[in-house]
Length: 310
Ligand SMILES: Nc1ncnc2c1ncn2[C@@H]1O[C@H](COP(=O)(O)OP(=O)(O)OP(=O)(O)O)[C@@H](O)[C@H]1O
Ligand SMILES: [Mg+2]
Image (cartoon, rainbow, N blue to C red; front, side, top):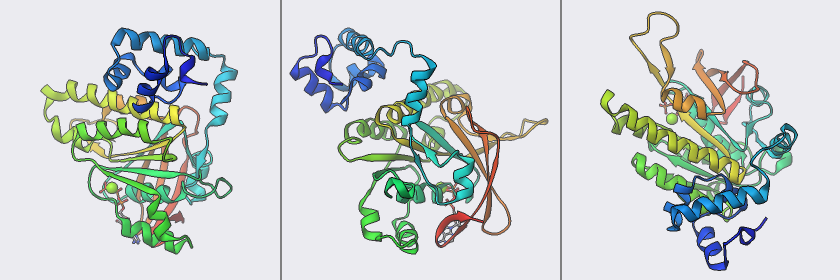
């Protein structure tokens, strides 16, 4: 459906909206008015009205579960190239939601992200989405050489593969948010089907140190992760984030190791996957939180060919 259908949105306003990345009714319908206003320069009250009118046109104020199910069927999946991981994830990494890989140093979070940046490019019948990846690197650990190596080992054209990965090095949390907003503008045009944020919160943790800054940090993180979620929904993207394990020395009972980011990340992440090292290059992944995937384990290994079944 077209933006121009929204009451009071004339051609020039529609153009303004489109330029800021609001290319569809849905984008207008689900984005908070404050954000529409900030990104377009349109007044808050007007943005509020646009949002309401767009929702009215789409009839999405209330959905039946059947309609919701139809939306869900539109969600697609990207293969990890490990059958075991794919099965655990219900067929691969899902679009329209956030999949979070959690684990300590060297468990393979970045390896999985780099590999998904390759597999998303495959045609659908081979488990891809025939699209590009956008890799947001907050730690400077993305390795084009490694991508080249994996693509070559899998019989793909490594140069072409690299060509289809858009790379953004994010230097601080503001930059990270700015880049996510940019994705709204380029996702459709560039056929981006996978967005990676590796890692989600290292900058937030580094910049907001101490208890006195915790509330501000969590609020900002909350806005950011909801921005990612909207990107996933509006553009039918797979969003993959990585997260570190935080050990809490004050916990005497239960597991002292928990994902960083607290409730904010826990609530916004759709599927949470915890990865642990086993012997040598062997790894085990486990779903720790998901609205419908059972708590299951998957075994895989990391080799020169990338991530594959054990
Ligand atoms: N070319 C390769 N051949 C085989 N294994 C590799 C290769 N490159 C990386 N690895 C494996 O991947 C591991 C690193 O994984 P990765 O960088 O994804 O960890 P991570 O979970 O992102 O860690 P961090 O939290 O430090 O970012 C290495 O320890 C090694 O076991
Ligand atoms: Mg990493």
